Length: 147
Image 1: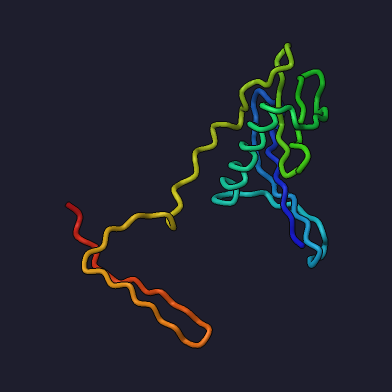
Image 2: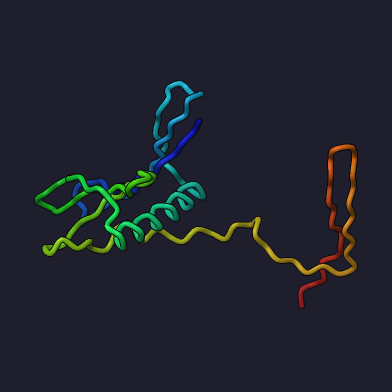
């Protein structure tokens, strides 16, 4: 079985001047080695960030996270969502113990998924085909010119 969890890390000389990366922590019983990490880019990175941001919101609202120290002097920690453990992120706390804004949040929003589009068709026909246990649906039509 393959599982993935995600890490959003601040690294570099100090959190005030960060570099950020998103890592997939992968476990696969049918792979050698059984565990490895991949730095994510592009769509996979954006999809992982959606999961991590959801977990951050849940953790902040419910307190359902564990926390480990990276640098106590800088109040720099990492948090892991509980109980799933599906994501981990770095957090820097203010003097009162509240999270400061995430310095990695300048990550641009993911581009729209090209698979999710709306198209208007004219003169369209939906054809259903059965071949033994196979079933196909074919939609044909004309896309009208843009106005």
